[in-house]
Length: 407
Image (cartoon, rainbow, N blue to C red; front, side):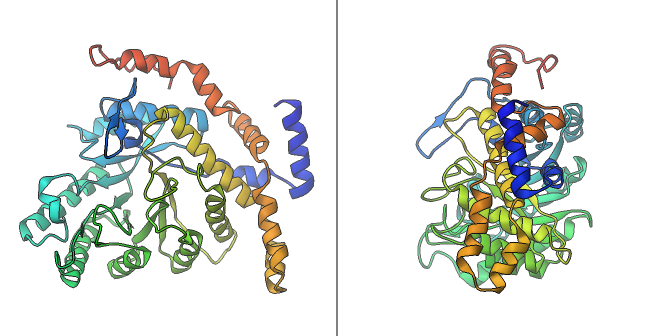
């Protein structure tokens, strides 16, 4: 720690008191990264290839392990099936353990096959609905093999034109399909149901908002909860209000963190609207402080960073989540409650602004040093030579030994 950081920490302690409990909570704040974020991606117009991207699921795990090495809090990676399908998932699980990480949420894919053009669980054809259910059960089996306790579901099901489908019939089919999946899960597994208000269905989507997801989950049972993707809302939606409501209902299951400017942009979390991210974390931190609340929230990133280097961007995103959480932990809950009781709107907002405007970088640098990792994750990654190594080893014309990777 340099002198400026030491002085900054002292100033933070003068303002907010003992920082040790805050640092302990940040160290335990696990953020899962997605396998698909490490591969090539693009827009509707072009996929932009990058050097060194993984060629298979094993190499995706290696890049995820690299992110964990430099952040210390990203010890699991979500898989997408069939994008990450392998012949032997027990070998993939063993590879993750060797790298010091684990496999997290399993994400089925029910939107890329020709059969699903008009829907998956909501298709008029019973054969295709049955095919979709079979895939969900396949993913549950994979989750069991890799000891994952989360099935994360998003459906592209919807319509593009009035009259294309019957809303009530499709709703019943969705409920039946989700129930079949829920009934196939072991008692230790949770189902997280995501929603999206449009795209690729431009007239309607079958799970269009948090209320629909909540209704499906409530019918299913306690182990079905809502997953919030920050990009899946209309502009101006108060996401932190949704978070608080679902927490109070016991249905806040998890997040897909990213950011948006116009629609489902899937850009880096915290890059466009960091205050929104802080306010979301403020609700989560407040619930953590409430002994009457019992939460089990899965914090996951879901982004398609087409232009930024894959690993650097993921490190950056994890750090942005940490910073937002740190600021939320600095909120003076007692003073905020008093301001609310007294109807002092200005004071209440100033309390939030005081935490939000705090520079938490010295605090995060200190806790990383305490964890035995470099205080500056991006700089440390760039100095590690990892990117040059994978750029060389992952040339499609060369073999790709895993030994010697600086992971």
